[in-house]
Amino acid sequence: MKISTLVTLVVLLIAGTGASATTLAADDASCHFLPMADSSADLRHAQSVGVLYSENTLNTLQYLEHYHSVALNGAKNAGLDPRISAAFVDSSDPQRAINWLMASLQKHFASVTVYDNLDALVQARPDAVVMLDTYNQLVTKGNSKVEARFIAKFYDANLQYIGQAEGIQSKVLPSVWVRGKAAPEIAAQINQQTELQVDALKQFDASLKALVTQGEAGQVATNR
Image (cartoon, rainbow, N blue to C red; front, side, top):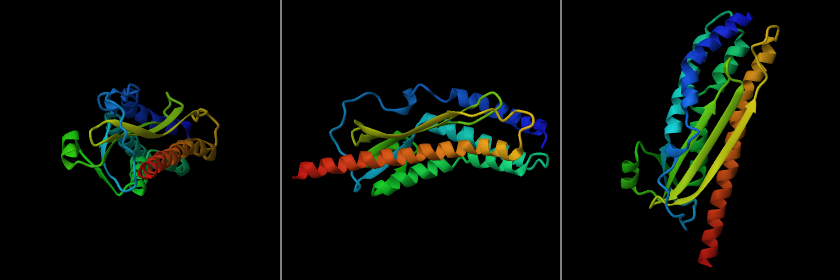
Protein backbone atom coordinates (compact mmCIF):
# COMPACT_ATOMS: atom_id res chain seq x y z
CA MET A 1 0.00 0.00 0.00
CA LYS A 2 1.33 3.45 -0.86
CA ILE A 3 1.62 5.82 2.08
CA SER A 4 0.51 8.59 -0.31
CA THR A 5 -2.85 6.85 -0.73
CA LEU A 6 -3.35 6.77 3.03
CA VAL A 7 -2.33 10.41 3.35
CA THR A 8 -4.81 11.40 0.64
CA LEU A 9 -7.64 9.84 2.62
CA VAL A 10 -6.55 11.60 5.78
CA VAL A 11 -6.27 14.97 4.03
CA LEU A 12 -9.93 14.59 3.11
CA LEU A 13 -10.76 13.71 6.70
CA ILE A 14 -8.91 16.76 7.98
CA ALA A 15 -10.63 19.07 5.50
CA GLY A 16 -14.09 18.09 6.65
CA THR A 17 -13.67 17.08 10.28
CA GLY A 18 -10.90 19.16 11.78
CA ALA A 19 -13.04 22.23 12.31
CA SER A 20 -15.95 20.20 13.63
CA ALA A 21 -13.79 18.44 16.18
CA THR A 22 -12.22 21.60 17.54
CA THR A 23 -15.54 23.34 17.92
CA LEU A 24 -17.09 20.56 20.00
CA ALA A 25 -17.42 22.17 23.38
CA ALA A 26 -14.92 21.51 26.08
CA ASP A 27 -17.05 24.14 27.80
CA ASP A 28 -20.12 22.25 28.95
CA ALA A 29 -22.38 25.30 29.10
CA SER A 30 -24.64 23.76 26.48
CA CYS A 31 -24.75 20.40 28.27
CA HIS A 32 -26.82 21.15 31.33
CA PHE A 33 -29.74 23.19 32.56
CA LEU A 34 -29.41 26.37 34.59
CA PRO A 35 -28.07 25.74 38.12
CA MET A 36 -30.78 24.69 40.54
CA ALA A 37 -30.87 22.98 43.91
CA ASP A 38 -29.99 19.29 43.95
CA SER A 39 -32.99 16.99 43.90
CA SER A 40 -33.85 14.61 46.70
CA ALA A 41 -35.44 12.24 44.15
CA ASP A 42 -34.01 8.77 43.47
CA LEU A 43 -33.69 6.99 40.15
CA ARG A 44 -35.69 3.77 39.88
CA HIS A 45 -36.28 1.07 37.29
CA ALA A 46 -40.02 1.80 37.16
CA GLN A 47 -39.53 5.39 35.98
CA SER A 48 -40.14 6.91 32.57
CA VAL A 49 -37.20 8.89 31.22
CA GLY A 50 -37.14 11.73 28.70
CA VAL A 51 -33.86 12.25 26.81
CA LEU A 52 -32.47 15.43 25.28
CA TYR A 53 -29.31 15.52 23.15
CA SER A 54 -26.85 18.26 24.08
CA GLU A 55 -25.34 20.53 21.43
CA ASN A 56 -22.12 18.54 21.82
CA THR A 57 -23.97 15.34 20.96
CA LEU A 58 -25.58 16.82 17.84
CA ASN A 59 -22.21 18.20 16.70
CA THR A 60 -20.49 14.89 17.43
CA LEU A 61 -23.04 12.98 15.34
CA GLN A 62 -22.45 15.36 12.45
CA TYR A 63 -18.69 15.03 12.84
CA LEU A 64 -18.81 11.21 12.87
CA GLU A 65 -21.22 11.07 9.93
CA HIS A 66 -18.84 13.12 7.82
CA TYR A 67 -15.76 11.16 8.93
CA HIS A 68 -17.64 7.92 8.20
CA SER A 69 -18.73 9.14 4.76
CA VAL A 70 -15.17 10.01 3.80
CA ALA A 71 -13.95 6.66 5.13
CA LEU A 72 -16.57 4.83 3.04
CA ASN A 73 -15.51 6.71 -0.07
CA GLY A 74 -11.87 5.97 0.71
CA ALA A 75 -12.69 2.28 0.93
CA LYS A 76 -13.55 2.38 -2.77
CA ASN A 77 -9.93 3.29 -3.57
CA ALA A 78 -8.21 0.15 -4.84
CA GLY A 79 -4.87 1.54 -3.67
CA LEU A 80 -5.87 1.49 0.00
CA ASP A 81 -5.45 -1.81 1.83
CA PRO A 82 -8.95 -3.11 2.73
CA ARG A 83 -7.90 -3.79 6.33
CA ILE A 84 -7.05 -0.12 6.79
CA SER A 85 -10.18 1.17 5.09
CA ALA A 86 -12.33 -1.23 7.14
CA ALA A 87 -10.71 0.05 10.35
CA PHE A 88 -11.47 3.67 9.42
CA VAL A 89 -15.07 2.79 8.52
CA ASP A 90 -15.73 0.76 11.67
CA SER A 91 -14.13 3.20 14.09
CA SER A 92 -16.24 6.10 12.79
CA ASP A 93 -19.62 4.34 12.94
CA PRO A 94 -21.86 7.30 13.90
CA GLN A 95 -24.60 5.12 15.42
CA ARG A 96 -22.54 2.81 17.63
CA ALA A 97 -22.38 5.06 20.67
CA ILE A 98 -25.93 6.45 20.47
CA ASN A 99 -27.44 2.99 20.00
CA TRP A 100 -25.37 1.62 22.89
CA LEU A 101 -26.28 4.49 25.23
CA MET A 102 -29.98 4.24 24.44
CA ALA A 103 -29.91 0.47 24.97
CA SER A 104 -28.19 1.02 28.32
CA LEU A 105 -30.88 3.50 29.42
CA GLN A 106 -33.65 1.17 28.21
CA LYS A 107 -32.16 -1.64 30.28
CA HIS A 108 -32.49 0.39 33.48
CA PHE A 109 -35.78 2.27 33.03
CA ALA A 110 -39.36 1.34 32.19
CA SER A 111 -39.52 3.67 29.18
CA VAL A 112 -37.02 5.90 27.40
CA THR A 113 -38.07 8.56 24.87
CA VAL A 114 -35.91 11.04 22.97
CA TYR A 115 -37.38 14.53 22.52
CA ASP A 116 -36.41 17.21 19.99
CA ASN A 117 -36.66 20.05 22.49
CA LEU A 118 -37.27 20.88 26.13
CA ASP A 119 -40.82 22.16 25.56
CA ALA A 120 -41.95 18.83 24.11
CA LEU A 121 -40.27 16.96 26.94
CA VAL A 122 -41.84 19.11 29.67
CA GLN A 123 -45.29 18.62 28.13
CA ALA A 124 -44.79 14.83 28.20
CA ARG A 125 -43.89 14.98 31.93
CA PRO A 126 -41.55 11.97 32.25
CA ASP A 127 -40.46 10.97 35.75
CA ALA A 128 -36.85 11.91 35.03
CA VAL A 129 -34.95 13.93 32.42
CA VAL A 130 -31.60 13.02 30.88
CA MET A 131 -29.26 15.42 29.12
CA LEU A 132 -27.11 13.10 27.00
CA ASP A 133 -23.72 14.61 26.22
CA THR A 134 -21.25 12.83 23.93
CA TYR A 135 -17.92 13.72 22.37
CA ASN A 136 -15.58 11.84 20.04
CA GLN A 137 -12.23 12.80 18.55
CA LEU A 138 -10.70 10.48 15.97
CA VAL A 139 -7.25 10.29 14.47
CA THR A 140 -6.15 12.50 11.59
CA LYS A 141 -2.70 13.35 10.29
CA GLY A 142 -2.73 16.42 12.49
CA ASN A 143 -4.13 14.69 15.56
CA SER A 144 -3.03 11.49 17.30
CA LYS A 145 -5.13 11.88 20.46
CA VAL A 146 -8.30 9.79 20.43
CA GLU A 147 -11.09 10.64 22.87
CA ALA A 148 -14.51 9.25 23.77
CA ARG A 149 -16.72 10.91 26.37
CA PHE A 150 -20.26 9.85 27.27
CA ILE A 151 -22.16 11.60 30.06
CA ALA A 152 -25.82 11.32 31.05
CA LYS A 153 -26.96 14.01 33.50
CA PHE A 154 -30.18 13.16 35.31
CA TYR A 155 -32.78 15.63 36.55
CA ASP A 156 -36.15 15.20 38.25
CA ALA A 157 -39.46 16.37 36.77
CA ASN A 158 -38.73 19.90 38.06
CA LEU A 159 -35.30 19.89 36.34
CA GLN A 160 -33.40 19.66 39.61
CA TYR A 161 -30.14 17.73 39.38
CA ILE A 162 -30.09 14.11 40.59
CA GLY A 163 -26.74 12.76 39.44
CA GLN A 164 -24.82 11.55 36.40
CA ALA A 165 -23.42 8.45 34.75
CA GLU A 166 -20.29 8.71 32.66
CA GLY A 167 -17.69 6.89 30.62
CA ILE A 168 -14.54 8.74 29.58
CA GLN A 169 -11.44 7.44 27.81
CA SER A 170 -8.57 9.09 25.94
CA LYS A 171 -5.32 7.87 24.42
CA VAL A 172 -2.50 9.16 22.26
CA LEU A 173 -1.85 6.70 19.44
CA PRO A 174 1.50 6.12 17.74
CA SER A 175 1.64 7.81 14.37
CA VAL A 176 0.35 5.68 11.51
CA TRP A 177 1.76 8.10 8.92
CA VAL A 178 5.21 6.53 8.90
CA ARG A 179 6.69 5.07 5.75
CA GLY A 180 7.39 1.36 5.90
CA LYS A 181 4.62 0.42 8.32
CA ALA A 182 2.79 -2.74 7.30
CA ALA A 183 -0.94 -2.59 6.60
CA PRO A 184 -1.87 -4.95 9.50
CA GLU A 185 0.02 -2.73 11.94
CA ILE A 186 -1.68 0.43 10.64
CA ALA A 187 -5.11 -1.23 10.75
CA ALA A 188 -4.51 -2.44 14.32
CA GLN A 189 -3.61 1.07 15.44
CA ILE A 190 -6.72 2.57 13.82
CA ASN A 191 -8.86 -0.16 15.39
CA GLN A 192 -7.75 1.12 18.79
CA GLN A 193 -10.21 3.98 18.18
CA THR A 194 -13.06 1.47 18.26
CA GLU A 195 -11.64 -0.32 21.30
CA LEU A 196 -11.32 2.96 23.21
CA GLN A 197 -14.90 3.94 22.40
CA VAL A 198 -16.21 0.55 23.55
CA ASP A 199 -14.20 0.81 26.77
CA ALA A 200 -15.80 4.19 27.48
CA LEU A 201 -19.26 2.79 26.75
CA LYS A 202 -18.69 -0.13 29.12
CA GLN A 203 -17.54 2.33 31.75
CA PHE A 204 -20.77 4.27 31.19
CA ASP A 205 -22.81 1.07 31.65
CA ALA A 206 -21.15 0.39 35.01
CA SER A 207 -21.61 3.99 36.12
CA LEU A 208 -25.31 4.00 35.19
CA LYS A 209 -25.91 0.69 36.93
CA ALA A 210 -24.31 2.03 40.12
CA LEU A 211 -26.37 5.21 39.97
CA VAL A 212 -29.69 3.40 39.55
CA THR A 213 -28.77 0.77 42.15
CA GLN A 214 -28.05 3.56 44.61
CA GLY A 215 -31.44 5.11 43.84
CA GLU A 216 -33.26 1.81 44.33
CA ALA A 217 -31.48 1.26 47.65
CA GLY A 218 -32.45 4.74 48.79
CA GLN A 219 -36.09 4.09 47.92
CA VAL A 220 -36.09 0.82 49.86
CA ALA A 221 -34.60 2.57 52.89
CA THR A 222 -37.27 5.29 52.67
CA ASN A 223 -40.07 2.73 52.59
CA ARG A 224 -38.92 0.96 55.73
